[in-house]
Amino acid sequence: MRKSLVMKVRESLTRHAQMKIEQTFVDFRNAVNDWINISINNGWITTRKLQKYGYKQLREKYPKLYSAVLLEAMDVAIGILKSSKSQKTIPKFDSDIICFKNQTYKLHNSGIIVPLCGERTYIPLYIPKKFRKYLLNYKLGRLTIFKKNNWYYVSISVNIEPPQRNPTNVIGVDLGVHNLVVVADAKGRELLRILGDEIIEYKELLEEKYARKQKYFNKILKKDCYCGNGYKNYSKYINHCIAKKVVEIAKKYNAIIVLENLKKIKGKSKNMRKLFRKWCYYDLIQKIEYKAKENGIPILKINPRNTSKTCSRCEYVNKKLKNERIFMCPNCGLEIDRDLNAAINIAKKGLMKLSSPTSPISLLRKECNEI
Ligand SMILES: [Zn+2]
Image (tube, rainbow, N blue to C red; front, side, top):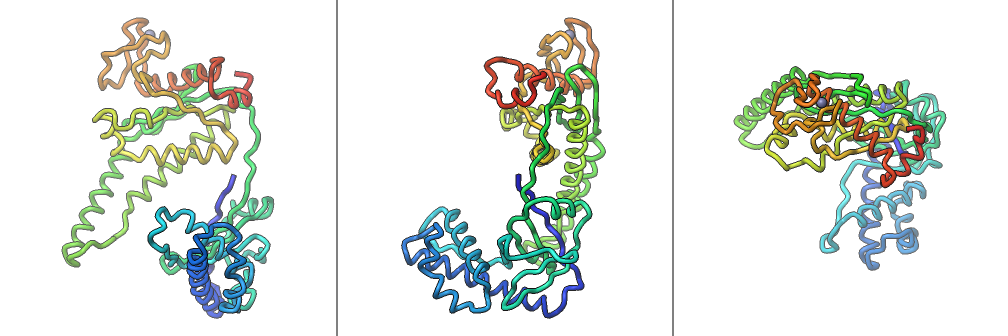
């Protein structure tokens, strides 16, 4: 599994080094565009064969670019050509980016040494503590230097191997508005509850503030103007924290995470669409999936049908359930918090899917044959 470590370049970067980076940005950008043109002139080549057609010529044109960097520019050009859908317009590369293969750079005293225009240059980095173990223990991949809001950043991709696990449990995750998240196991234990009302209220407040600010800007500048949207960062941050907690619980109970397959309900009812506007659940699910993968925890998606209307004790389906917070079972008399009930049902459905012989997820079953 690939992970990108993005690190900010320290302010102690020398002027000379900064100049070198800027020069290389220009050369690299031009080289990518030249590769694109060479490919197109020779019949839209999108393989490494392209090297044959232009290497010599570009080597002369950019004598200061290291040959490995020039070839990396070719790979970027190939990537762009492959992803450009129509062959009618010539794609253009105009980013401030330089890429390096793993053999061309090396780590040095909390920084890196990279071959920039004509010389190897030291770039000091802010390396967060949690990145050090990746940098020291894993195989390092491609390195990218890029510029954003006048800051330089370095991104290094590493190949990490998630730990092997043998899950012996399942946990169900229910997502909602009143409770953003409720996590429970199939035995009915509540493991986590995150109240959503206040979080969503605050998000809406930020949204409103943003809209007002935007309106004001548009008025005085008489055009569309971007003024930053704090609420998106806020939602992402909250989602990050929730995902971290959910994965921690899965680790603690050695469990598989069971989620509702939201694709099956998307757009079906007005209420659902309303719900999806309230909070970015897709982002939350993506974050849970990513962090689970990183930790070697399998994820299982189940059909969300009736998860909140079914009694988690006797499986009676209460079709009359509206918006009550408490689920009352007319069959067995169970009274239980609505979202907890749903989370238990999700966990149970996951368990059932795992143990059914026709299950398409035999791979998962192999991983957790104890269930
Ligand atoms: Zn019941």
